[in-house]
Length: 89
Image 1: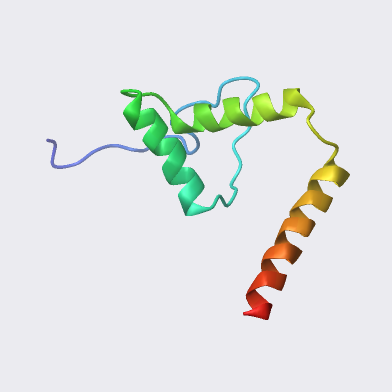
Image 2: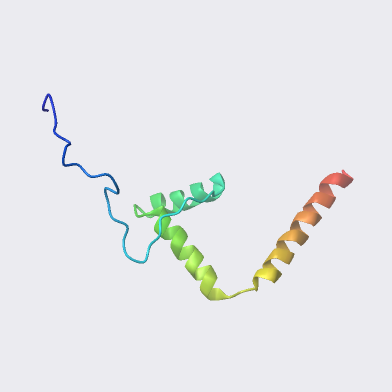
């Protein structure tokens, strides 16, 4: 190891370039969901949990199961039902 380094020609920015067609974002994912994806990769013997999340989102997107409105209505019904059960106890 040197006693001193010359960073006068150093550049700021990404160390690793983002591949074309990818966008770096920050999102919040529930801990249990992230842990599940990480366990899947670990159990498989390696890989990238971010790629696995991307694949799951793409599969859902391509399945076209429900419209956004139907999905939101379903979630609201589930939440109201769960809330109603808790408040009656």
